[in-house]
Image 1 (tube, rainbow, N blue to C red):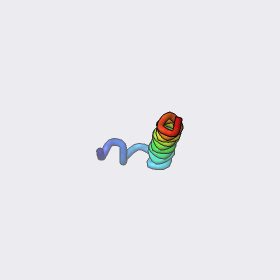
Image 2 (cartoon, helix red, strand yellow):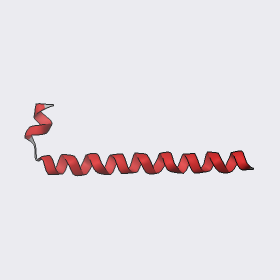
Image 3 (tube, rainbow, N blue to C red):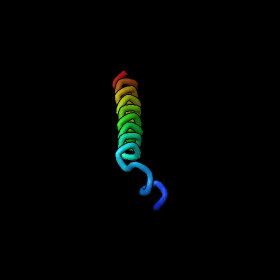
Length: 40
């Protein structure tokens, strides 16, 4: 934990943010597809 804190925090935060956004996008896509299948 301290090691990641030691490295440039900005880079780590950017990568973490991108990962979270991508994961949320995938979950949202899956949820939309599931809703569409349920409606059909």
